[in-house]
Image 1: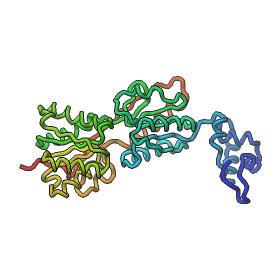
Image 2: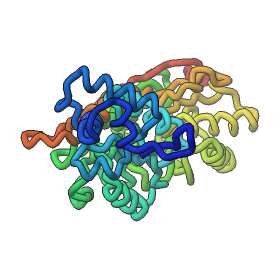
Image 3: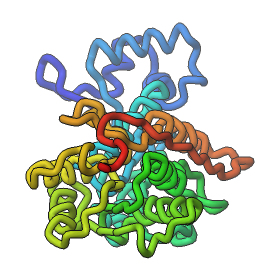
Image 4: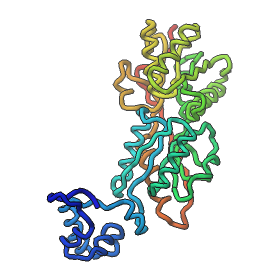
Length: 346
């Protein structure tokens, strides 16, 4: 059933059948198994559904064995521009197949993440895309997922255990450090989010690896700060700490663009110029990065490709094909140079 009719009654499946001049079973097949119904009949039934404003009952559809039209998406933080852009890309990826997205946030909590996955399985969604909250790089933690719930790991390398789409965070950290070394910076800071968030630790690993390849000692030439969160205020507090301690280097790599905006705010508030005195690199390339007060040099994540690939994998994984094999898609980030980086002051 759906909404009330113009006369105040509830529109039921039998009302659609009466208007279309077919049986209730034909209406049910048109909704749940359209391949069983002749095109001309499908057209008549579809017109009746549209005219009456009938919306099928999802629970009733599940009882017929019809696949759900809902896909779950569990992210770490709904306030993150990166995850919101990824959610938009995922929604575009499933739209043409007639599916809708149910967005949830784990807030980085593993227990909440587990409860959300159980809830989605109980709701009978077609499958779920999950941005894992675990700090581990090993996907084995997710072997005990609800059996009825096909899952694709998002922004996480699933190895052979799961379908997954990820971006090479190690390479992203390397690209940022390589750019700064090439400009002549000798001492760099990495401002990341909470230490338990795996993406930040991988990006920091990339910065260290690139410094070692450039014959630098990360122990002496790299200052690492773990912010308490991933937003502008957190980046500002991290930069204020470096300013107070007198450990501000000539360049900073930030774990995401929001942290970079906060770093910029702290530097300018202290009378430090960007990039004349200190260079700043962000990560993600969210929309506002190019329009920031000083356009931000950043590491671009292919967010549209990430969302589309995850949507394609989920629809493939949840199709019930016994020959399905898990696939892992790893995407490459790229350096986008703007005005927030320059050679260090003489």
